[in-house]
Image 1 (cartoon, rainbow, N blue to C red):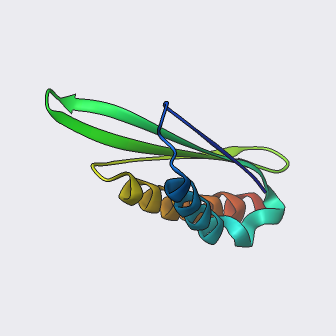
Image 2 (cartoon, rainbow, N blue to C red):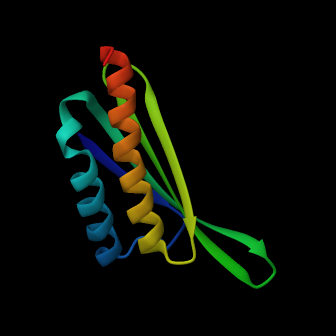
Image 3 (cartoon, rainbow, N blue to C red):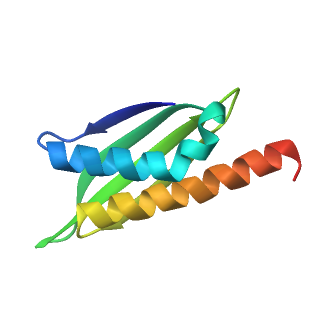
Length: 102
C-alpha cells in the first residue's frame, strides 16, 4: 500500500503528515494486499464570507480494479482526517465484500 499526500501550499506540516499517515494506516492496513495506492488530499473551502472549512479527500485505488472516494469537511483539519480515514476503512470493507460476494 503506497500513500500519497497532496494538498494546497503549506497544507502539510510534519505533525499533520504523521497524524494522517497513522490514521490512514490504522483504518486500511488490514486491507493492504487489496490496495495499490491511497491518495490523501487537503483543501480549504469557503462556505461563508468569514467561514473557512478544511476538506480531506481520500481516494483508495483497489487491486486489480476499482476505487473508493471519501470526502469529509470540518473546521478542524485533524477531525476531517479522522472521519475520512474511518469512512474509507468502512467503504473499502464494503467494496471488497461486494467483490467477493459476501
